[in-house]
Length: 435
Image 1 (tube, helix red, strand yellow):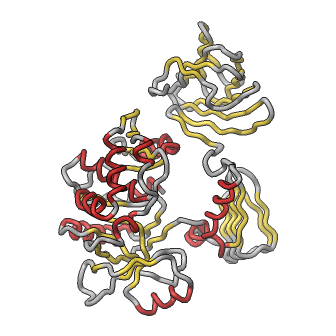
Image 2: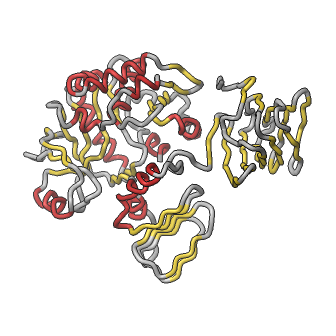
Image 3: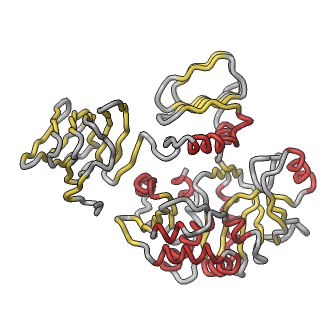
């Protein structure tokens, strides 16, 4: 969906290089996704911690200004679906014109149903001939009767969370209405450092920013806000119910993604990444199976997933922060299994890439090549391993893994020892500047 967000901009005139804001934990995944579609000049800003959309957009505006004098910024989320790209382009063109007149522009999606999962924008269409209308009010996600009333009245739009504004206009309005956001973002950006393809902002300065959305920080307070209505088959895939609504379904309203067997179910979504899921006679359910966790919920409770995250945090669990598959600049690894004094990983190394020269104080490692060719440095020794060959790395031995081949290297790593944390690593040399 990140790739689709950028690719649907093809055909718009005068586009500059994109600025992507993401959490630092997602940096390598984002970089790989951008490279796959040829976006090698994108600036990737890393948030050291989540502070909502207002601080994120302040960072993006500061970065964009360093690239071009007071550019116009088109702000898009990476989890949207837009069916009619041509209509979307027309709306963007209208929004850019409004922004160049000094407005802060938000896109209002013409509602097709009384949706309770979206916020609403009140921007009465007084004569039906203008490209944009002044925003009178932002409203929170309503209950069903309120949403039905909005639809009957007209002049209400779904809040898409997409915006257009000139960067200096945004920064001025931030300084006027929520100066602590502007000050924290400016301090964090001024102390930023470049790391490979990434811009790392200073953590403590950024942490001083309040956790606040751009709607609360600026859009609800400014007198410069206008709405550009559009109807281009938009959907915010912010919950699994939205995913089901957009998916292809069978004659009973079921959508099955991945390995599944069903008997007699209706209006059900099954999404499975790594194992067979069987459903028998269920109705209106979502069954989401990922390597990290399994979610089973009524579709009508799709918006309540945040409550589950709250429980995970309250119990000091880590499933919402740490995932089995972890991306690194050289490739990725998947934590297949773990137990007392052992851990098993599936490691994939990109062609021509290599890991750091490193050592561990508490664990030994056994590597078995599954696919490709591995070049292994062990102390003063260098080995070349092919499929079905293996080697052993004792505790305390310096070692390095490289892929000299033309295809991805895949191997199984078995770790053993009293402590298996990712911080048990001393890097002696690294292509990617990591300490």
